[in-house]
Length: 184
Image (cartoon, rainbow, N blue to C red; front, side, top):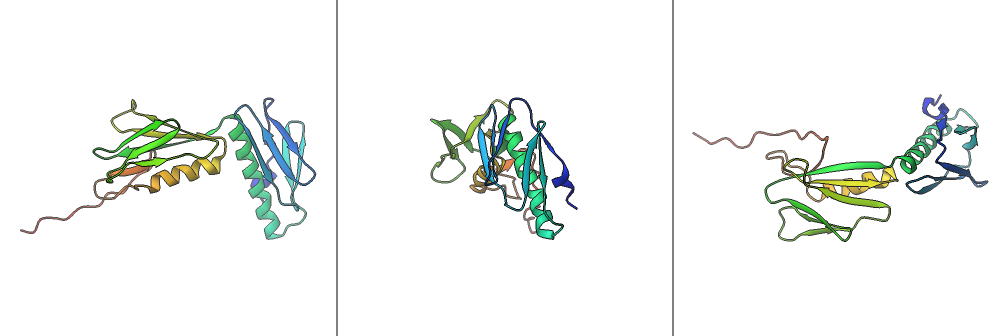
């Protein structure tokens, strides 16, 4: 039995939820609007400020879809009310980041700067005041898109294990390796 799917999603007063006949759930809030096409086997109902989900049978596929769509729509409700944020730290001598006209410019030790244009719905900012390393802040209402953009920026120069240089998540631990030892 899906334990995640059985939990109802509480919806605040500032959020409007619309469940269409073709199982499209639209969530509007102070930060934006998101919609999702739910599998036709899963029934979605909105009553008394709570979203609830039901499945037709106990098949493995229906149990999986039950929990999946409940989690996805819960992320939508959280996104339009509070939003999601990821932070990336840039570590390395001469590694820099700046935002000009909504475009992220990164200097990551290559012979050229890297320009990253964030997709619609994603806001990118750089914080240089919080410590010695610049921190790239990625914010948006879509949890999947925020994580994807953060992973894409991190993949431009992933942290290396010897000196720890590169782009990493703020809460990420990079396991360090011992370098070569001099032969005596």
